[in-house]
Image (tube, rainbow, N blue to C red; front, top):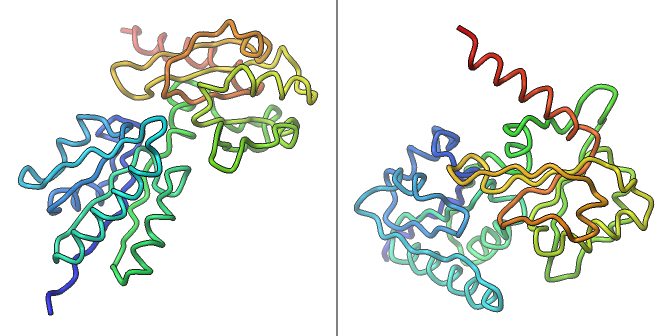
Length: 249
C-alpha cells in the first residue's frame, strides 16, 4: 500500500517574504505541491520548491464554495498519492482562512497535517503602520472581527466598548459597519485607519474617522485591515519619530 503524504497548513504572513517564519521557508523548499490564495504575494511564492506544482486557489465572489471543494480535493488527492503538499494562506491559517475546516477534512480522511503559524495582518499591518493595538492608558485590549461571513455579519453593538477594534475583510461593508457602530454608541469622532496591501510595494494607509467611514466618503481598495480606536491617533507621532531617525546623519 502506498504511503500517504503529508499536508502543511502554512501561514504566509501579510506579504513581505522576510516575515515568513524560518520553519515555513524550510518546508516550502521540500514540497511537491503548493496551493495558494489571493493574499499570498509573488515574492513569498519564490520560496517554494522550483520543481513543485503551484496551484492558485483564490476565491472570488460567488465561487467560494466550489473553490473550497477543489481545495479539499487537491490536498486529499496529493496526500493519497504520497506527495507532500503545502496549503499557503495569507496571514495565519487559523484566523478567518478556513484553515481549521481544511485541517478537519484531512484529519477525517486519515491524512497527517502539520500547522505552521504565520504573522497575521491583523496585528502586523497596524503595528508596521505605526499603530500599536494596545497602549497603556489608551487600550487595554483588542478584538479581531470579520467584516462578513457565511453565517451573517457580527452584531457590531457587541464591540462598541472594545478599546481597539480590528476588522478583517471589512472593506466592502465598511460604511454599514461604521454606521452600526456609531448607532450603537461608538463615537463618530473615533480615529480609524485602513492599511491596504500591508508590507507590499502597494501599501497605502488611509487615516480617517469612524464618522467619515459611516458617511461613505472614504475610498479604500481591498484587501485592507480596518482599525478603530484611540491608538490610531498615535500614528502621527510614532511615524514622525521614525522619519526623523531615518534622516538623521
